Length: 120
Image 1: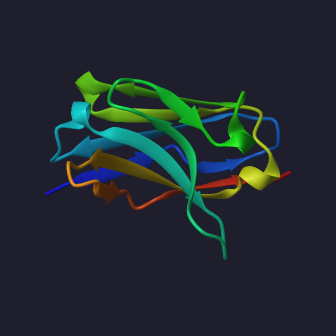
Image 2 (image 1 turned 45 degrees about the vertical axis):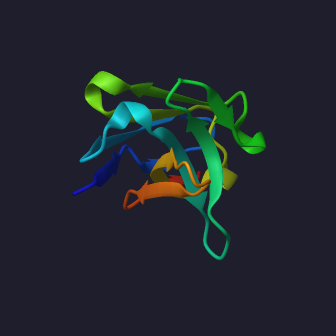
């Protein structure tokens, strides 16, 4: 059974920092691309940051220079360090484990989400 368990969300003021964690079980963590996605109310789920199995990181335009994604394969955990938070970062953050398949499809697993609220 695959599980992705997120933690670290909460309420912070603008300009502050948070660090999200996502620990996976039931998968060979090291071969999966790991990502963080957000889904604000009434909007589509969108990519925040992705780190490939080879540790290459990609970021959404709105978070470049502020957020850093990292992974620890020994702990089956991916992190998202969020600095200089803005009210528009407010959303539910979902952890994703993705594995590209040979037929071009992609195997995806999702966590339950952790809420981040940035407000003064």
